[in-house]
Amino acid sequence: MYDDLRTFINDVQEIDNLKLIEGAGWDLEIGLITELSLKKAPAPMLLFDRIKGYAAGHRVVTNPVTTDRRIAMALGLPVDGARIELVKGWRRKTAREFKPVPPVEVSQAPIMENVHFDSDIDLLEFPVPKWHELDGGRYIGTADMIIQKDPDTGWVNLGTYRVQVMDKNTVTLSIVPGHHGAEIARKYWSRGQSCPVVIVCGQEPLQWIMACSGIPRGVSEYDYAGWVRNRPVEVVRGLKTGLPIPAGAEIALEGEYISPEVDEGRIEGPFGEWWGYYGGKPRLKPIVRVKAVYHRDHPIIMGGPPLLPIDQDYARGIINGAEMWNDLDRHFPGIKGVWLTPEARIGTMCVVSVEQQFPGHARHVATGVVSKVQCQKLVIIVDDDIDPSDNNQLLWALGTRCEPENSIDVMSGFRTMPANPMIPPEKRKSSDFSSSRALIYACKPYSWIKEFPPSVRSRPELLEKAREKWGSEL
Image (cartoon, rainbow, N blue to C red):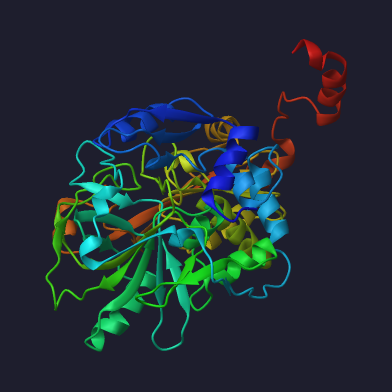
């Protein structure tokens, strides 16, 4: 596992697929090239250099964890195997008792190679991209890490929230209410104080994945990453806030997150949302006044803008899928696989493979899934002979084992997000952000499961014998 983004990039170049792109422009071209790269799997990791209007060495990297292999590299898992093996591997890696491994402070850090304060700050010294055609501006924070500290408990929280550059030393920070970062900010604001914050815009992938994976309230993502790595994350204290910054980070913006009652904010957006749509109109968002900027020589912005067809946040689905699998195992027998389908957008579709053992088993499991925050729209239950991460197998099960008349349940009244494109205008006007869930049973009816026709798929041992004999010809 990695201490900085550069080591990860070097390994991708050695054992996976890294493409260097020179001469692209920050205004749409970086986003367009990244989108084109995702049209054919597996998409390469892209490193942009010599960006128009910027000196060589001021770089942007995209597609950091959009393939199974790179996710495995980031999480410290075996790099070859079926997609579902990523979830199984993460479950094995985190099966032991959680014991926090706090970060360790160091006196020398690459992030401090360049330091700018106050009037010396110019955020557009970095080639901040405009990612999508209809975006309202340039976003430095799409695969970022926002560092905050709870004023009551000292809990250090890391989250991922979008950041738009407004001028040379001002950004907007867009945090959805209910997220840990919003809770911490409100505590400061209620006391008439600004919220100290650090925005990291390039870090090794595991820390970013932890920052957007729903680590429980009160547990620092630093402590969790250290536990996963079996060694602490090295940090250095910010000179303005004292917040711990990853020593190997590329770029860090340190400042004050200002209450809307003190400063009304700036008009932010629109922005291409993770659902794959422009989910909202431009609106006032609170600002961060940047007081210090730290960056390495030849800094790299890590970008993870929502693009189609694959969710740039794919790795989060591995972590959340493993968490859901663990939870289901505690309540139901026969769980053989859990997968959050990234092509549908992480969290909108959850597929669970079940070895049915009693009448209603599939429905019991589905109702257990639908209550989880990781599920936003569709729950699909398949039999244990289906790999839930294999879309070909999933579609086969949907097409041949789902009888629409009695295999689909719809439940309403669940909370959703404002970015959900299916919220009708009249509900949106009244701030009614509720939606339905569909529970789909693409599995053999238990009442006559023994009479269900056998599939034409050959037994694994026969296929293995054929592979041993004829594999070189295939």
